[in-house]
Length: 408
Image 1: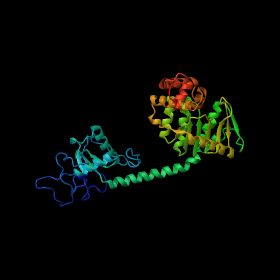
Image 2 (image 1 turned 90 degrees about the vertical axis):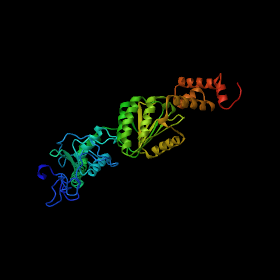
Image 3 (image 1 turned 120 degrees about the horizontal axis):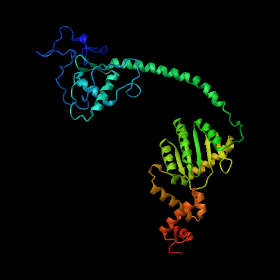
Image 4 (image 1 turned 45 degrees about the vertical axis):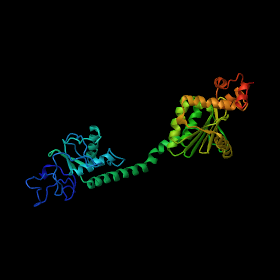
C-alpha cells in the first residue's frame, strides 16, 4: 500500500511522526487484535477512528473539505498566504494542530464537528491554505488529508524566501541606474534659474502649482503651510495626494487655517483625513498671509494680490524670518478635534468665535476679516447672538457679551 499513495517529505513514515506515509517496519505490531492497520498510520500513530474526535479545545478539526486531488504548489512559486512568507495564519495553525490531534489525518468526507463557529467557506479557505503552503497533503487513494512534517515545508519556504530576497536585493541595486535616465530628464525640465539669495518669481496659477508640486515631491523633512481663506475642493484634492505621499516618506506637515475652514464640508473632510495620516492642522482667529516652507530651504509667498504671481525665496535669513512668524502664529492657534465635528458643532463654534470678537469691540467687517468669513455670514451669526442675548443693536450685544447687566 505504501507505494500506492504520494509521499510528502523525508520525515513522513519516521517513527513518532504524525501522519507518516510509509508502511511500518517489518515485524512491527499491526495494532489491536483483529484490527487491521491503516496504511496511512505510522508505527506510533493511533488507529484512525471512524469519525472525528470530540472537540479537543482551541485546536478543532473544523473543515468543509474541498474536492480531493489538489496538488502541492511547485517549489519556487509565490506563496499567496500569510505575512510575506507564505506562513499559515493563526486559525489555520489551529486547524493543523487539530489534525495532528486526530492522528495526523482526516477523511475527505468527514463532517465538521458542531459548535466550532466557523462557516463552511471559512473552513474550506483554511484547509486550502494549509494545502497550498504544503502542511496538508490530499490522498485520493485513501480518501483523506494527511498532515505533512513542517520541517520539509520550512526547508522549501526558506529556499523560496532566500531566493526572493536575493532577487529583491539585486533589483534594489539596479533601481537607481534604471531610473537614472528619468531623473536626468526630470532635472532637464526648464525651471526658473536658481540664484541663491534672490527670489525667483513664477507667473500664472498653473506654473505656480507645477513648481510647488516639484518642491513638495522632493520634501524629506518638513512642510509648513499657512492657508487663509477657503480652498476650493479641486485644490484640496491635489494637496491631499501630494501631502499623503510626502507624509509616507517620513516628513512632517503643519498647517494653519482660518475658522472659515470649519464651515466647509470639503475642508473638514480634508483636515480629518490628513490628521489620520499624521498631519497637524490648527485654526487661528487672526488674519495671516499665505505661506509654504519646504524643508526650511525654500519659501513660497504671494507676489500679487490675486495670487497670480508667487515668489520662491531661498535666502536663509528671509526663510528664518518667515518661519519665526509661522511659529508665533502656530503657538497662538487652536487645536481642533476634526473627527468630532458635525454641522451643529461647527455652527456653534463659529458663532462663539464671532461673539468673542464682538465682545472685544471689533466691528462686523473686522470680525469677517479676522475669521476669513464674508460679512453676510458674520451677519447671520450676529443675528443668532442677538436672539440669544435679547440685544436690539450691535453695541448693546457687545456690551451684554462683555458682562453688562440690564438693557441699554
